[in-house]
Image 1 (cartoon, rainbow, N blue to C red):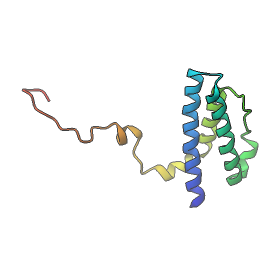
Image 2 (cartoon, rainbow, N blue to C red; image 1 turned 90 degrees about the vertical axis):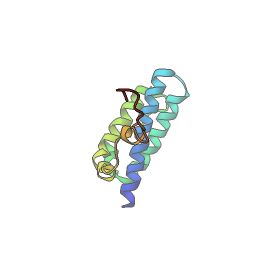
Image 3 (cartoon, rainbow, N blue to C red; image 1 turned 135 degrees about the horizontal axis):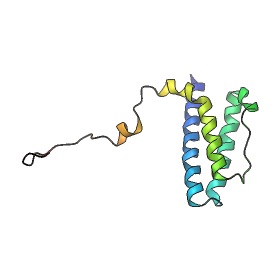
Image 4 (cartoon, one colour; image 1 turned 60 degrees about the horizontal axis):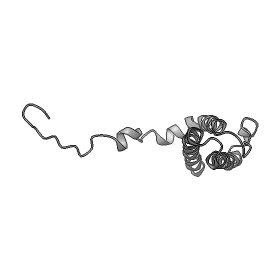
Length: 115
């Protein structure tokens, strides 16, 4: 149970690294953001290797100077490896748009024939 929770959290971090690396590639490809994303990816990969030794042959650490696009691809692939496991944990959760962007609290006011 604890292993599943930790894997779920680490996969969530990988998804965030993917988004951050995409932004770093777009905004400043040679800046500190890309290096930070590669560093974070390597830390998550090291922990996942401890939890699941079988991935050691499939995924390798990135160099600190790896381009953000490469970091994004690597993080996305590593997350995909564990996504089927974490999907069971998060199946009860609603998608992002339904949680935060819905019409919750919407009150319609009738003005003539229009809402």
